[in-house]
Image (tube, rainbow, N blue to C red; front, side, top):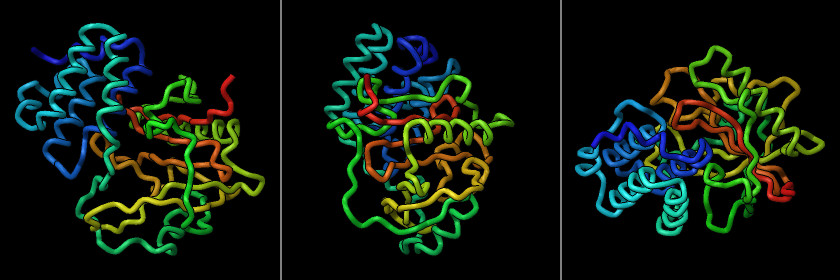
Length: 281
């Protein structure tokens, strides 16, 4: 049976995005390159009405445990939104978060230096201050889900519909910048010195695995995150959709009460979400 009907089975876009986030965060592991490629096609299929992946490809390339999880999602989509909710809960419990080794498995074994990262971020109007070596806490659910898997009851706040933009839209950089700035300002990302924490992959160009950490940074008076071309802020996933520079990054307020994630979704759009549980109610 063709899988072209899947996007119509979700309650709404939020539920579809939660399911997609679990496919990427818990099932797609780029250390298993062929399996990951097929699972990412399935992720895309959840948004598309044309055929990206077949059940035969899933059978051939996806390991049995993950293939069973995928089939349960397909069955849930064709059953009811409540069944999808049950799948989301069960899958989040069954699978741990994939420790991302990076989309570029050939990257250098030598990590980037602070000076290299600082020079790269200059183009975006971000001043690198210091690498964080102490433990960082996240305002995320105890399950350990990523920001995109959070729900409104977890303190998730999304961009407004007019701030969501396609990766190839001519005004993409301007819209992403404007949406990011509104949410950063409204939800308190920057302190009085315009400082915050930025998630950084410190691994070099041919690293066998990524080396993720945090850095304290300061936003300059003049900045352009979405049009900068910064390697540190670039979305690797967007590379399957477009050749242009598309940003994707995670930020955290210095008090660690607020997390901001500007991300690329499976329908080839970019938007910003904030996780701030203390703003609920």
